[in-house]
Image (cartoon, rainbow, N blue to C red; front, side):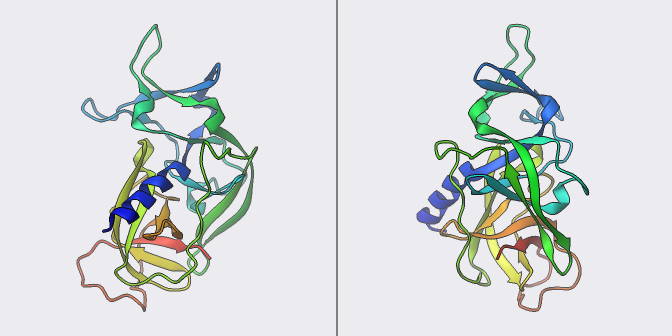
Amino acid sequence: MSADARRCWQTATRACAIPIPRDQVHARGGECLVAAWRPRADAAPRILLSAPSTAFLVSPRHVMTAAHALPPQGDPDVVYAFGYAADTFRAAERGLPAYFELRAASVFRVRAVERRVLGVREGDCALIELERDVPADVAVPLTFASREPQLGEPIALAGCADGQPVAMRDGSVLGFDAIWLDHDVEAGPGWSGAPVLDAQGGVLATHTGTAVGAALAASAVAGGVRRMRGSRVV
């Protein structure tokens, strides 16, 4: 993969947000504190989420994510936080347990779920309006790819693995049709809603999970590859 592609992908991680239950976010001046936890003693600290997923900025006031990551009805009772990285972790101190420290200016409440699409023939994505615009110094919206994907082309996911800080994984396109895109980037809980990016940093799809059912007609991949799936963004 090219160095230019990797730079584009690293830049795109700034546009990713993690949904944190509102009752876990505690204000302290210009900061928001979120308790850290470790699923095992040797595991890296992370944020405990009721529904691990990722969202990404598509306009100054809108994020996109996977529809299946939202409650079936109503708006999610979460805030979307940008800038969640490993260096925001703080060890226990002055009577406080271990926590992540996020800028209050990078944490946004939900105003409404504007659009929700979920179905085999429709896709799996949702558009969420935030309570206020996201400043450019916090995150810059991602743009959508203006062309069709190509079999075998390099792609990346930028997202939060099961409540961990934003990270990036790369792979390639395995197949696509008008609704779905299959890829080979290993992704488990927390990656739902992550943007599937081409080498120029354009959004090709919203990651949804493991591919199921028959192979896509456009696919030409040998058996044995674990197929992941994204909902095409048009």
